Image (cartoon, rainbow, N blue to C red; front, side, top):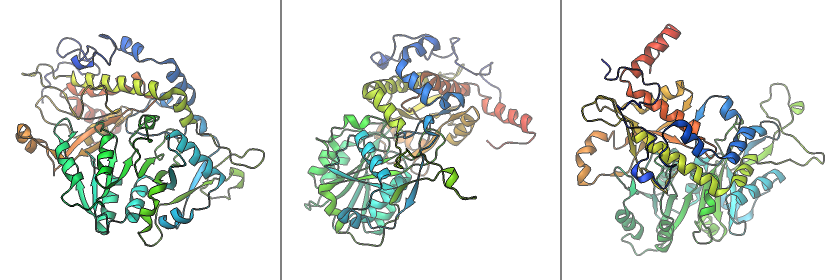
Length: 502
């Protein structure tokens, strides 16, 4: 296929054939530097000495590896400086959640310190909530589903614009226990909650005050859409118990919640996929103490997924062939605990982290939307953004697709593979529960794939910098060359002397 662009687009197309991505979007004036014209000027505007210092001192592996990660969102627990001892392992416990809530459980010194540190970081009061360690996020959702009384509170209502494995685990467990599952719908293409439909589901037709469980994330980890806290109040006012999914929130985001005003009955977060090379991690299930009795009406066998944190042994203590990892001890034999990742987030603070993330994600959205195929008859856009565009209040994640010069979508899985070859980690996923108005009825048939839409997703972490973001934009701009995919195929054929499936 002949390329409509005479050159290989290895960077920006700034010769007049497509808009300059550094020129402001009309909606971006209050969020971006004033009319940056070069990468250097934009980099200068986004620079922050304190954040850059923390990254260079404690997370230097993010730069040394020459690999940029846009496939993770949430709370980081360990920095590179903690790849030395101490470490911990997780140990599964055969215990019933109801019994655990009623009679408590033995807590080691390590668990006590980790729990207190996490609750302080999450701005959650120990007087109001108790916490259970789980193997991961999915385990936390399943654990609650197995203990919630769906026989009397029959409904499960979720608010997700994307396929979520952990939520699907909860849905399957809930259905087996008699739950009636309902989903919130989102308007295409901005993915805003269809407020009228959701309110009808919250109010319901029944006068029974025991409605069920309302599962609510404050933001989408795929599209970056953020939702009003008031939905939690509306749900509770109408007889629902509220589970707040905080897994997609970044460090310090919980400081904005104001749990004194919005008190969910349950809360889940994850510290599983963390920066650095240490694979250890876990999920957390928080249960409001005044709501613990709700779970006691459910009976059953021991729940799977509750874990204990245990110190790993020193290398000198590990028998040959063992898989235990190492941990350090202080002189009195007590476990030493330092959560450097949380400390770093605390030192940077909510304002700096949120401003940095907002500027970067809005710059990225603006820059991606400015890319248009050169020489195409109507200046077809290279990228389509789903969900919020440039906004003051949006999460640090974006869902998008790349389209070729014929207007055909490039397979998100292929985009992910090619990005990986350029040392950029992206994710792909599926948008679901989409409602199309009459205006977009024609488009419905074009975009839906088995009632869902496949997309590429990119998420910015709290230490993502402008260089990382620019590299993602530069990679996407390569698709302005209509022969880019074919060139990649031949390049790898030449290097490996065999055909590489892409």
